[in-house]
Every structure is written in C-alpha cells, then in structure tokens.
Image 1 (tube, rainbow, N blue to C red):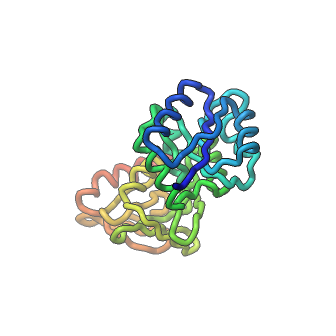
Image 2 (image 1 turned 120 degrees about the vertical axis):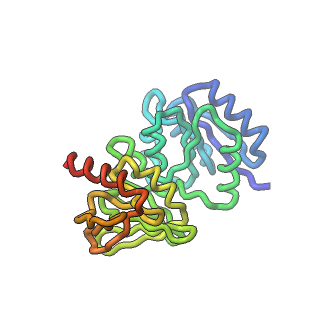
Image 3 (image 1 turned 45 degrees about the vertical axis):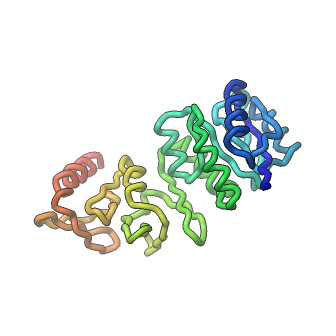
Length: 252
C-alpha cells in the first residue's frame, strides 16, 4: 500500500485533532507522522521527518506559512494549505494553482488530495507556484499560474489579450504572440478574472478590456484588440459589455 508520510502544521490543536481523525477514517494511504503548532516547530519537524506531504495553516504565531516555506528553496514535499480565510484569499490560491482546503475540512477534499498524490499529479512543489501565491497574497491579484501538459507558466494578467474556448480546453493569447493551451473550461477563468477587467463578450471569448482598441457597432458588434484580432460580441452580451467597457474607460 502506498504510504504518504504527512505532517500537520496548525496553531489550533482542535483543528489538528479533527484533521487527524478525518485522515484516519477516510484516507488510508495518508499516515500522520508528526504535527506542529507554529512555523518554527513546523520547520524543525519537516527537517527531522522529511515528509511526503504537509497540511499547512497560513496564519500562525511566530511566522506565517509563507515564512516557513521560505526555508525550503526547493521543497521535495507536497503542500496543501488549510485556511479559514476570506474570498480574496481563496482567489489568491486559485490564481496561483495552489491546492487548499477550507475549514471546516470536508473529508471528500482530503480524498482528492490523497488520490492526486498517489497518481503523482501534484505540482505544489514548484517554487514558482509558491512565489506566485505569496505575491498574490501581498499584492493585487496580478499573476496567474497556468499549468499545461508541457510545463507550468506564470503570466501577468495584464499581458493576457484574450482567452478562447476550444472544445474541452482554452487558449490564452498574450502579448508578444505568445499562446498557452490549458485543459480547463472558460467558465473557470470567467469567474476567476471577472474582477480583473476581463469580460466574456461571447460564449467562446473572454477578453481583457485593457487590450480593446476599438468597438465596431453592429447587432452585437465587434471588438478590435491590440494584437489586431477582431472578435464578435454576442447580441445578448452587448449591453452588459458596453456598460463594463465604459466603466473601465472611466476608471482609466
């Protein structure tokens, strides 16, 4: 049986106990070998036990989860953040493609973690993802991690011109003629980027408003983008799009 050696790092002992209990009953491959209640103690436990996985709370006395991870330039363990943070923080996780579980913990989310690690699908050990997550927590949500079949890339949201839905994947078109193919639905990025001046002008296109150079009137109309691409605006999206675009221009 696959054995995933695990450390829990959380300043709430009740939370540690509850997580241990859930892992024992629902995740038979995950073995908790130690726990810690502070960033300093967590660092010591990681160095001592060299785990395969850590469950890490963000806000703890004596340093947060990010300060702990700064001690491990290239961590060789998987990381799952456990948080009771607000909606902004959750978006920071999603922008950074970092796995997280909300408190109170749902055992089904733990089973997803277990399955991912067993199938070796976990990408949390990449330092660029951790750096992006830390950046997004401290700044506006400006960096987006895109994980394709070939590699993981970090892009600045302002450099994305538009995103196109193509069957079961999406294509990001960025400045300098760069394109990135991602196996996700456009709906996911519409929800993620709606507050970052992106608008879905058509069922197949999510456009960065800052890259629109011209709107051509018509039944639905068309937009011309900074890369010269011309895209249709659907009739039913026209009113909301023009409102969003005018609001964007007023901000600038």
